[in-house]
Length: 222
Ligand code: ATP
Image (cartoon, rainbow, N blue to C red; front, top):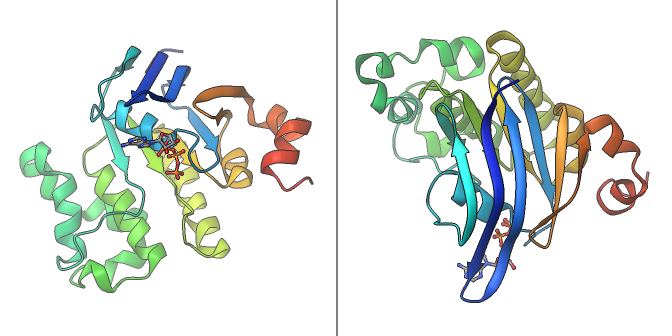
């Protein structure tokens, strides 16, 4: 399987403090991969390096294909309509970028809200708009920074179902950056555990879910 994302020996320092230290990570075409880590582990730094916002101090980041991000906190334009927010995601695609119908097919709930100001939507609806906006760029890989943040469990389950469907129907690759390890391991095939800037563990989700260190530190000991 060819890798869409290949991170190798990635090291990032902030004025002397090392945020990432030799991180190796891959996402294959059509694969769903999770990156799990506590607050301050270095997840946001990795996302910034992936999208080219940060220059690594060492190592390389290669993305083969188009990468689109669902940013932490969703970052809607709250005063713009749902439809305009979606179109902003497709601006690079010219005329095709204005066709939002596929997003409403994927998220029927948004259909009746297309003229609503995005800022008036619920957190779950905003997360659908954020995912839809990223899809408008027709990505090969979607990087989702904290899918579940601030959302009720039922809403997270619904969003996870949509992602599974997207993955199954379009073969979209996903890198899910999550504090909610249970969700990450349920949704993804493989996962990496980031601790203090280093990959402490990685493997299939099934293996990690049985790993005593993972259950103790990330799954509440069950
Ligand atoms: P969170 O979930 O809280 O966003 P994170 O896993 O995304 O955490 P990062 O934000 O990547 O972690 O931070 C990794 C480390 O780098 C932390 O120790 C953080 O304090 C430090 N750090 C992050 N940004 C900067 C910065 N601009 N200057 C200095 N140190 C920083």
